[in-house]
Image (cartoon, rainbow, N blue to C red):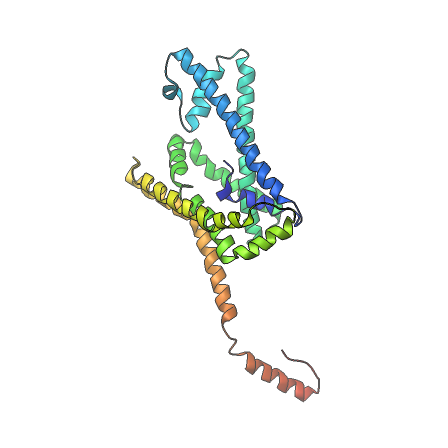
Length: 291
């Protein structure tokens, strides 16, 4: 639920000052998130237990996954409360706040990536954000059609199943293998001089343990998706959704390696240009240093 693979944490952290003590945030944010998840679990399953008791059924027979829990089972349980209208309004306001909060983080991440890569420089940040929200609105209309729940299940099953694992693994590989674990350690010590944790153990986990676990989980996810009961055309759409989020990563890597190859290529025409400039300078009698 931290959404590490979505890039929101990295995006928000990029706005911090260089001397910001990020170690405190690295402890507080997961603890607060985990405590919130535990509290939500206690509330949800206590309500489901009460509903199962009223129906005379087992909890696993009452509980539902996906939108059925939020829009069918839970409102039915709230209707049994004293002051049900008040709790129903508060519940759906909570869902609205959660949705807006998630959309804000995802939008900020996407817009920051667009800005950092210099895409659409002629478009200001305000109109760019408005255009992004408008495109997301029209894309979301698919989920309110008659088959919207089926499309939601398809997107939820395939869209992030592989891309998140690949993105998270590449983040660890890029930080520790490409950028370098030694440079990362120097940055950590430079930004948090009072950091007294086991830095070597942290780097070993980021360099070896975490990518290995993510690759193993990715393999299990790949095997799990091959046994789903979807129509053949839906499975094709699902696999397409799985690999589309990886395309920007491939594009960025291709752009990076192309720029490196261009810098490594010797300028064959540079000596001729320099000799021509020197000839013009000697004829005009001006003195200039040519590099």
